Image (cartoon, rainbow, N blue to C red; front, side, top):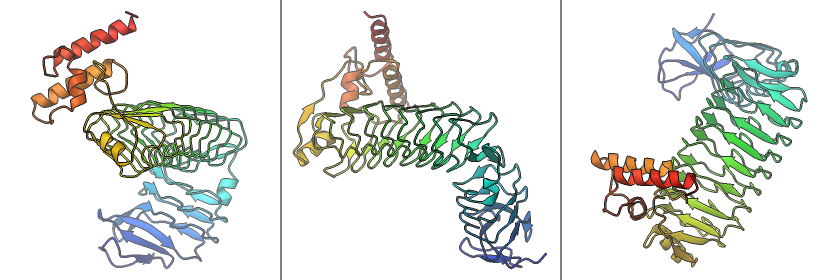
Length: 415
């Protein structure tokens, strides 16, 4: 079989294989299929080219190749990029090995092969759901499924509920986009990532439970979910990405976990039912227009005196009263845009600024105590010092954590 004689190349160089398929060589001396000629009818990908393994089908590599009828991939391939075979309308035969652990967004959508699949979940590679056929009200994803590819359930307009097994690790971008009758969804323990636009325009979605195993939620994940009332965010995400809840007009309450460090641009843009919001002391930045057009938002409390607040009039809606510490960035922001500012009163024990005294506060005191003892952390903020120093001995230590736990226990017992 003919092949190009070059063995090594820069990432930018592209070579021709078998007169119809182009490829590049990545930094690991592996072959990435990048594109093909419009006349290609069979994509029989070899396991090696010039002694280097073929490991990836690149983004849009065969997209819209109208003559392509069959695809066969070797066991060396582990990745199929977004839109790789999208709109290959004549494609009717596909051989994908179990070694494929990632399949991108809409990789096989709008192909003859997909249309000919039986009702239910369409699965390829290492138990990855790439599509759904039928018009049932409930979608049951089989146990053992490892991932839900991007766009797999996109515009499945009749689905009202979905069961996701704990074997799933990743949910791709646009996975449930446009499922306009989907009312609730549980993201089970084991799932690690939710892709961008994963549930956008699921207008009937009222509640979504997201397991703490999730560490990343992509931008625009819930944009336009106008029925969404409640979201329980996982305790391991560090950032609220761009426009994640944009246009969630029914969202009235959301609790930020202490792991969140950043709130991205337009994160809550147009959440007109939000009335108050507490930005915990762990948050270091609030992005541009994060709370723009939140017309019912009357109170925003910023507990980190050094939190970087984007210099834009829409970062915090004009109707909101801003609460913060004296001489803090929140006070500076309020003065810059002529907003009403109120100094936050210290709630004894509430070191993380979520308006509750509980185990998480004791944990944060201990974390500060440990890090200061090892010399890995700067001095606590003014709010952390005053709220956490329960026994008023001018230090944050085990005694304060113990007292916080006592208060928590008494509150729980109704004392």
